[in-house]
View 1 (cartoon, rainbow, N blue to C red):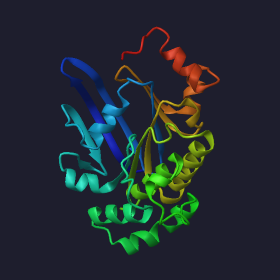
View 2: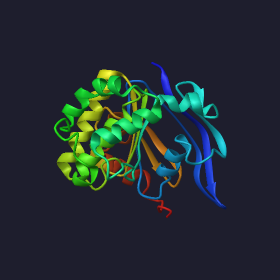
View 3: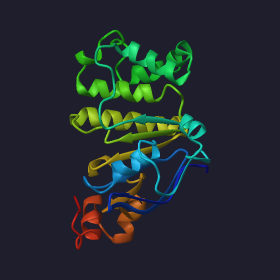
View 4: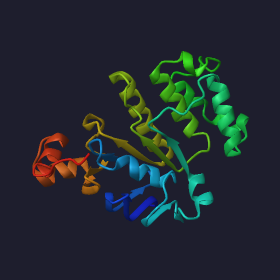
Length: 245
C-alpha cells in the first residue's frame, strides 16, 4: 500500500507559543483518515502547513513521495476544501468550476465529463446555472468538493468541511467522500472536531495541545483502551489535561 501523505516530525510555533509538537503520521492510498481534536488543538495549523499557507519551521512533509519543498510537483496531487468558503458568490456553479479548471490547466470539457457522476451524486446537476449566493450552505459545500476533484487528485484534504451544516447534509457528504475513497483508491484527510463523523474502520489520529495522542483504527483504539465509544477514549486519554486555547 502506497503512502500518499507523509508528515515527519513537524513542529510549529507562533512567536514563542509552540502549537505543533513533533507531529508524525502517514496516510495511505484508499484510506479515509480522520484528524480529530477540539478547537485549538493545532489541526488547522497542520492543514495550513500541508497546503503551504504556512511555511514549515521544523520537519518534512511528503505528498505522493514529493517533498513539499518541491511544491509544484507535490501540490499537483492534492485537492483542497478549506473551512472558510472560497467560491465566488456572483458566479454560477458552472462558472466557478470552469474558472478553477482554467487555473489548474485542466481542459474544462474533459473535466466536466469526468465529474458528471459526482455532480449527480451530490444533487447539483440541475443547478449548474445558479449563482453561488442563491445556494444553501450545504450545496455550496458540495460545489467546493466537486471543484477540489477537477484535477483528479490523489489526496483530498478537507478542513472542517461539515461545520454549520444540518445533520443530513453532513452525512450525505461523508457518505459521498467515503464512497469515492473506495472507488478511486485515493486518500482523504478529514479534519474535524465532531466525534460522530468517525466510523469503526476509519483510521483516526487524536490531537491534543499540538500532539498526536493516539493513532490507529477506531475499532482497534476502542479495544486497546477497553472503551465503548470514541468520546470515552478521548475523555480517558485527556482526563488529566486541560485544552490550551
